[in-house]
Amino acid sequence: MVFFLEKNIRILLRVELLIHYIYMFQDHNHNDIWRRCLAIIKDNVTKEVFDTWFAPIVALQFHNSELMIQVPSYFFIEFLEEKYLGLLRSTIHRVSGPKTKLLYRVMVENEKQTTLDCEESTKSTITTRENKKALPKIHDPFEQRVYRDLDPQLNPNYTFENYFGGSSNKLARAAGEAIAQNPGKTAFNPFFMYGNSGVGKTHLMNAVGTRIKELYPDKRVLYVSTHLFQVQFTDAARSNTINDFINFYQSIDVLLIDDIQELGGKTATQNTFFHIFNHLHQNGKQLIMTSDRPPVSLVGLEDRLLTRFKWGLTAEMERPDYELRKRILVNKVRHDGLIISENVIDYIARNISNSVRDLEGVIVSLMAHSMVYNREIDIDLAERVLQKTVKIEKKQISPEQIQEVVCAYYQVEPKAFLSNSRKREVVQARQVSMFLCKKYTDLSFNRIGELNGKKNHATVLHACKTVKGYLETDKQMKSEIDEIENMLKG
Image 1 (cartoon, one colour):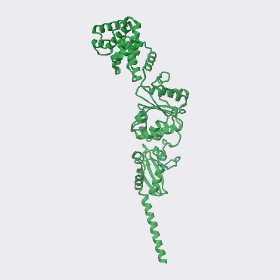
Image 2 (image 1 turned 90 degrees about the vertical axis):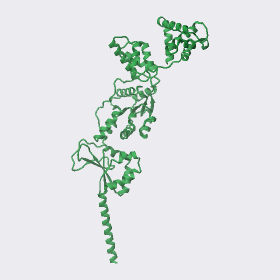
Image 3 (image 1 turned 180 degrees about the vertical axis):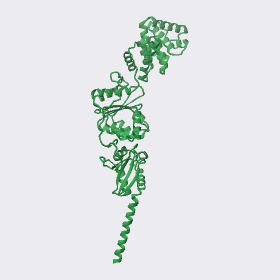
Image 4 (image 1 turned 180 degrees about the horizontal axis):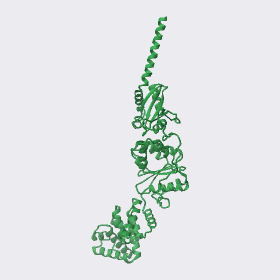
C-alpha cells in the first residue's frame, strides 16, 4: 500500500514538473501562440481586413498569462477594441488558456526605444515603461481634446448672394439653404451633391458654410478637398499621429468635403473617414460631400461608406440651362463694370453650355482683349475669344426644322408655304426660311429653292438679299429674325 502511494506521488510530481516546463515553454514561445491566433482570425475575417488590421501586429512576449502585442499606432487599439475585441479574446483564450490577458504596446516613431503600453479594454490607462523617458507630446487617445479657433478655409467669393438658382440646381440650393439655417438638425444629413465639373457644387458648398458661420459664429466649420484629406492622413500615419488626426476631425461641427470620389481605392483612408463620419453623424454634426457621380456609380469605395452616403439627401446638379447661363453672365458683366450688348451675352450663353467656370472665364478674356486692343466687345470679338478658349459644338439645324419654326412663328400652313401663294405673310415666311437655310446649312441655292416651294436659284438669291437688307434697316424685322433663331438654337 505504501509502495503504491509513493509511486502515485512520484507520478504527480512528474506531472507538475511537466506542466511547469510546458508553461515555461509557452512563456518563451509567443511567436507560435500569435501564429496560431492569426490562423484562426484569418478564417473569420476578410482578406482585406486581415491584411490591414492584423498582419501588421507583432507578438512581443507571453509571460505570466499575459500576451504582449505590438501595434503601429493608437488608432489600431481603438479600432481593434471597437470591432474585433471579442474575436481577439476568444481566439487568445482558445490558444493559450482562458486566463490569458492581452496587452498592447505602441511603438512611437521618432523616439528610439520608446514604447507606450496599455491593457485591453482599459481605455483610461496608458503608462510608459519605467526605464523610458516621459513623452509630453503623446496624448491619451480617449481624452477629449480642446482646439483653438479654426480657419474654415471657405472661399469668401462663393456666397448665396451670387449663386443663381434654376431648374438645374433648384433642389440642391433649397437643401443648402435649409441646412444653413439648422446645420445637423435637418433630414439632409449627410448632404451628397453630384454632377459634372463646373456646375456649381463647390460654390454651393462654400455658400452653405459661409452662411452657417454668419448665423452660428461658434460653429467649427471646415471645407477640405478629399485630396488634402488624403495628404493629411498620410502625414499623420508617417508621424504616428493618426489619433490626433481623427480627434481633430471629430471636433468639427460642419464638415464640407469636396470630390469624395477620390477616396476610391484608398482603403486605410476610407477606414479612418468611416470612423470620423460615424462620430460626426451620431453626434448631430453636419456632413456635406460632393462628387462627380452618384453614390451608386462610385468605384473603389466600401459598401459601408456608400450606404452612409445615402442616409440623407442625394441631389444631382445638372448643366445650367440657357436662362440660368444668361443670368450668370449678366451678373458677371455688372460685377466687373463691363458694357456688353445683349446679343453678345446671348451668343456666349448659347455656345457655352457645360460649365459655369467657362462662362466666367470667357468674360474675363473678353475684358482683357477689349482693354489690350482698345476695341468694343462685339460678336466678332466674342467669336474669336470663344474659338480659342472653349470648344464650340454647333447645333446641326436642318432645313425641315427651319421651315417648321418659321411656319409656326408666322402662323402659315405648311401647304401654303410650299405652294405658289403670293400672300404677303407666305412670301415673307418663305424668304426668311431661304435666308436661314443659307445661313445654317451647306445646301446650294438650287437645293434651298427646291425645298422651299420649288423655287429657282435667282429667287433664293433675291430672298437672301432682301432679308439681309431688312436686318440692316428694319428693327422690327431684325427682332423677328432674332426670335426665330433663338427658337432654332434653343
